Length: 118
Image 1 (cartoon, rainbow, N blue to C red):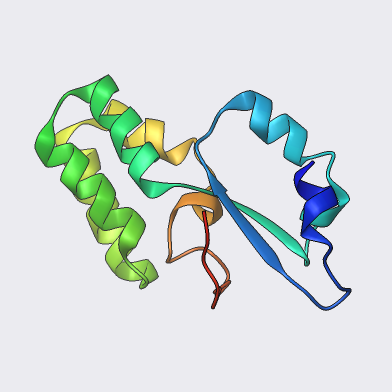
Image 2: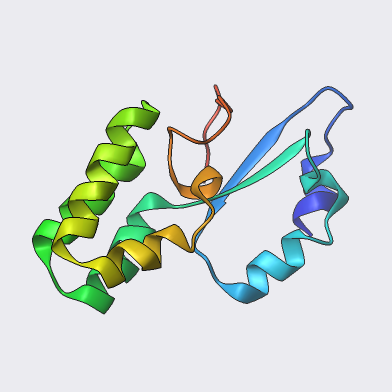
């Protein structure tokens, strides 16, 4: 239904930001409008941090997760990730399992949007 209502032109691009629900991820993989380079799927940083905090129950780690995802500079991202690793190796590994291009600004390939809607 989303693809039906988007009505994209050939030169249009769209970025869908969602949580990491497996049903949604699977559905997006079958929508032609979301094939690169026209469609990009990213994960909501707030949801990443919330899920991270539910698992590790540590405000300092949650804040570092947010900072890592929001940094635009790769080196600053890596420094924060090393700080997370120093505090909790399992938490670091959990974040490493998520494609960095889908939850961090530093690895998003300079995909920016000038229009945002819900």
